[in-house]
Structure formats: structure tokens, C-alpha cells
Image (tube, rainbow over all chains, first blue to last red; front, side, top):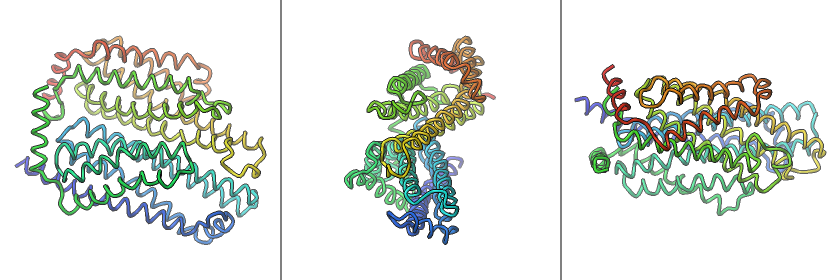
Length: 246
Length: 231
């Protein structure tokens, strides 16, 4: 009876994890879309003018970034509950990486708020000239990208472990888990390469594509199909046998 | 605590793995310092190509320390499960802070590296802003050290209360924790530098070598785990 309750709870958490994968992606992209609509590339004065006129909208876009960092904690906990029976230690390690990622992601939003405040104040009081405002905007975009890449390195480490456990447990189709693992391995490399080469080539940008595809497909799978507990039991049995023969 | 909560498989090997990861963490710290990264970064070293080696080592150190944290959580759960979780949270917050402050090095690099429109600010203005970025890194490093200090203090307490590791290691690690906690008052940490970091390093190195060479007493670990199960 207790076993059934545990299984039911794990399926619920897996479905919630699927939903969170999609929700976080939608919230993050919507936030980026809102803020990018107000930005005029290469024209900081026009951008600042638009931001001042639509400050609430701009702040809402940034708040969505904070919301996605918050939801990442929920996603990590849901994934942890869904896979912890496979290997408690690895699941815990993955959770630890994801929590550090979420903390870095949330704190990095401070960069946005700090620069927003600075640029709006400087724009309204004419303390800085256009060139200086433009230079600060460049610095802002570099730091924003650096913070995101640092966070992604940590995210990648956690994601590798979660997809390893999915693959080991056969809780989702192996092709999905293997693709997710492949995408996760690319994340830290792409993140680090993007820090070293701040003007990345389009080829480097492709490094984010596999994890994007994997998260959408795994998210949909978990949301609609949940996890396959029978396969997962086989996976657990395999790991128990492996541990007992060690 | 359930049976599953305490995995009884080979605590000695897990302790040795923890020791190995701890050693790698410390090596990354040494590489960071030698390459002019971390808190040793200066305006001159940031322009040197070896800066990237220090930068990579600094980030790798955080990743390794997350692994150490997870392994120590497992190792000291039998001593006190709730406090062990609290200790892990202290360490993870320290890791998050340490990972984030690397952004300030990127800021200094962008300011000095001419990635911006160089005519916007005078070279003196850029130097001042870059120096401020490095100072912010150092302040952030101090904040991370405070969290690591709380972590080391708790780990020292766990070792002291445990039956599977020598108590003297617990005392050494608690002293390491106190040395880290000097960063709670930056002028004090500055006055005691580098002795506070040396004391911290000594305690951590002693624990690392013990775990790596001797590990934990598996029988006593399992006895303590069993006692925790009965509570």
C-alpha cells in the first residue's frame, strides 16, 4: 500500500517536472521577448527612451527571468523525487548542482536590475554622455552573458546526472534520455567556450540546441506519459544487482 | 530515517572518493592562485593569457566542492541527519556565491580588454572601474568564505561526535572553520591574511589526506548508522 502511494507520488512529481520543464522555458523566452522588444540594437538613447516609457513592461520581462530561476528549484526537486530510488547519492548530487545553478541564476538578475537603475538614472539626469551609456550597455550584455554561462556550466553538471539516471532506469525512452545526456554534456562546454569567446560564432550557438530539443521533448513526455515504473523497476534491479556483485 | 536513507555500501570507498575530490578541489585552488586567478587577480594578471587557466580552475573548484558536499552529506548523515543537511546548505550557498563572483573578473576583463568603445572613458576611469570589479570579487570571496567557515565548523563537530574518524581531525577542521569565519569582519581577515588561509588549508589538508589514505572505520560507521536508524 505504501509502495503504491510512493509510486503514485513519484509519477505525480515526474509529471510536474515535465510541466516545469515547459513552463520554465516558456516563461524565460517570454521574458527575453518582452525585454528584447524594447531594445534598439546599437542605439542606447532610443533604448533608454523606450525603457523609460515602458518601465513596467521592461521590469515585468526581467521579473519573468527571476521567476524562471525560482521555478528551476521546483523542477530540480521534482526530478530528484522522480529518480532518487535509482541512485540516491547521484540524485542528491544532481539536486545540489541544480540548487547552486538556481542561486547563481537568481543572483545574476541583480546585474540586470543594477544596470537598469544605473542607465535610467544616468539617462534622466544626463550624468553620462551617449558614448558612456553605450559602453555601459555593452558591459551589461557581457556580464549578463557571463553570468548565464557560469550558471549553465552548473546546470549542465546537474542535468548530466539526471539524464544518466533516466537512462539507467529506463524510466523514459532510451533515445530521449540519451539525447538529453548528449545535450547536457554540450552545455558546460558551450558555456565555457562562450565565456572565453564573448563574440561566439553561430556554430558555437548551436551547442545550446540539443538541450533545448531534449528538454522540450522530455518535458512533453513526462507531462503526458509520466515515467515508466515497470522499466524503472528493472533499472533499479539492475543497479541493485550491480551493487551486490561489487 | 529509513533503511534506504542510509546506504550501507562501502563507506570507506565513499570516504576515499570524497578525499580524492577534496584533493582535486585543493589542487584547483592552488592552480587558480598560481595562474593569478581567484582572489590573487590583479589588473596586470587579468591581461595575461594564464588568467583563463586560473578562471577555469576557479570554476572547476566550485564544481568539485559541490561533489565533496554531497559526499560529506552522505558520510556524516549517521552522526546527525538534520545538521548534516544544514551543513550541506551552507556549503552550497558558499558555492553559489563563489561561482557568481567570477562575473566580476569578466567585468574587469571587459573594461581593460577594450571590448567596449574605448573612447567612452579615459584609461584612468577604466582602471578605477576595473579595480572596483576586482574589489567586489574579493568582497564576494569573503562572503563565500563565511559560509564555508560555518560548513567547516559543522563538519568539525560531526567528526568530533563521530566514532569513525579521529577527534583531532574534528578539532583541526573546527579551527579551519574559525579561520574562515574571520572573513565575517573583512579588516580582521585582512590583518590575519595569509595566516587565516594557511590555518584553514592545514585543517582541510589533514582531513583530505586522512580520508584518502585511511578513510573511515566502516564497522564503526555502520554501527553509528544503525544507532541512528533506531532513533
